[in-house]
Structure formats: C-alpha cells, structure tokens
Amino acid sequence: MKKSAGIIIPVLLIVACIFAVFYFHSKADDAYSTTKNADTVSTSETSKYQSYIDRNSDFVGYIKIDGTDIDYPVVQREDNEFYLTHNFDKKEEERGAIYMSTECNPFSEDFNTVLYGHNWLDTTMFSELVKYDDIEFYKQHPVILFDTAYEDRQWKIFAVFITNADENEDGGYVFNYVYPHLGGDNFNGYISEVNKRTLYKTDVDVNSGDKILTLSTCYRGMDTGDYRADARIVVVARLVRNGESVNSNTSKAVKNSNPKYPQRYCDIMGIDNQYSNDEYWYPYENE
Figure (cartoon, rainbow, N blue to C red):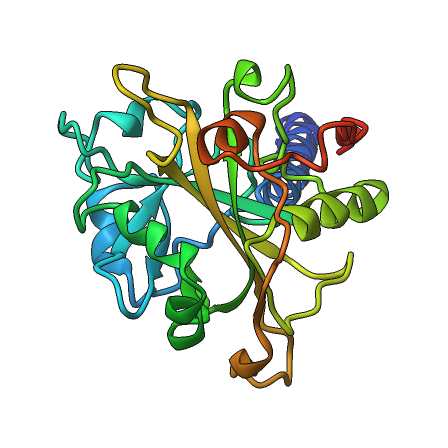
C-alpha cells in the first residue's frame, strides 16, 4: 500500500504541474489576443447600427448630410474595387455603395478618413456632393454627420475643391488628398494645397491634432464632347472638438477669388492658371 502511495503522489504532482502550465499558457494567450485585437470593435457592445452590423460585417459607419439624400451605411473591404459595383448587401449593383478607403483604419482613426461614392448625376450615392460647389448651399448645410459603429460624430466642412485623378489633366500632377497620414510632417504642405484649391474660405480652423473627413466623387465639369475627364469634387470636414459648438459662423464664408484648378479645367473655362509654376507637393509616406 505504501509502495502504491509512493507512485500515486508523484503522478498527481506531475498532473498538477501540467495543469498549471496549461492554465497559465492559456491566460498568456488570452492576454496576447486581447492586445492583438485592442483596435477592433467590441462585439459585446450594442450599437444603434446593430442591424447594419448584422447584415454586413464590413460596416464601419453611417453618413448623413442635411439638404441631400446622402443617408447611407458605410463599408470597408480589403480592396477599393468591390463596392464600386456592389451594394451594401454585397449584391451586384452598378451604383455601388459608400465605402471607406482600404488604406484608412476605422478603429484607430488616421488623420484623414476618406469615403468614396459614385456620382450618377441624380440624387443617389454621392451625386449631391456637387451641390457644395455653391457657397450658398454650404452656408445652409455646413455640417456632416458621420458616425462610427459606436460613437456619434459631427464634422464641420472647411474646404471644397475640384481636382483631377489623371495626371495628364494637370501637367503630369495629381494632388494626393486621399493619403491617410496627412498630419505630422505632412500637415503644413497639405493644408497649404487645400487652402489654394478651396472654392471658398470658411471660419473653420484646422490643426495637426484634428481628425479630418474627406468625401470624394466624380465631377463632370471637365468633360467635353466625347472626352470624359477623370475629375473629382472633394468635400473636406474637421471633427467637432470636445466641448466645441457644432455651429459654424457661415456668414464669414467668402469665395476664393483665385482657386487652384487642374490645367484642363482652366483651359476649358478660359482661366489663366496662376499656379502653373507651383512646385508639386507630395506627402511623406509615413505610418
């Protein structure tokens, strides 16, 4: 009996050690998993947009702009092509969906969050962004609602500009307004370009510690005859700061007397391009 007890006790000790190793290893894995997924949305939290989350796991937010029919869920995928031809429910549809650039991080939030949508020259998707080429429309609708899955957010528009996506339409240059990391060392150069290009000046200030929202869609004002230009109208807004009023003093908004346009736009409109000798600005590619 004593001999059996002498065998059993070491066996039990070995089992206990194995259990302890397994237990603490599991805890370490849990800690690693928690750290690894720290920037993902918690699935245990209930969202007012839960029905959209349940329908499509690509859901990252919701956008709404007063005075327009822009009132859509926003998605993001690992590429920028899928939602050009698929709707929110991932079904093929030429109107596509409103989607966030794959380069943007919807959780940690880059300085610049970029949303795309088609312009069908009607009231669908981002078609009505073109209304913002009119300063009077801006004065009536200076704020964008763009919520994340779990947080309500409002954004003050500070600039609207027309640009090109084809380098051949502006002397070999494309302004990179869609790069996510336009803060830090890129901020001054970026803001300088935006201030030159904006169709009107607003009283909304922007600094490198802010978050900005960029909405981009096709612009047909550079088309001629059978030629379809690869142009964009871009609306840029700043996140309302903590404790700041959402209201903007739109009475201070004034037209820019000399916006910087692509060369093709200047040629079509018969405008003297006073920026033709500007040095090309490119963002530093940092993380």
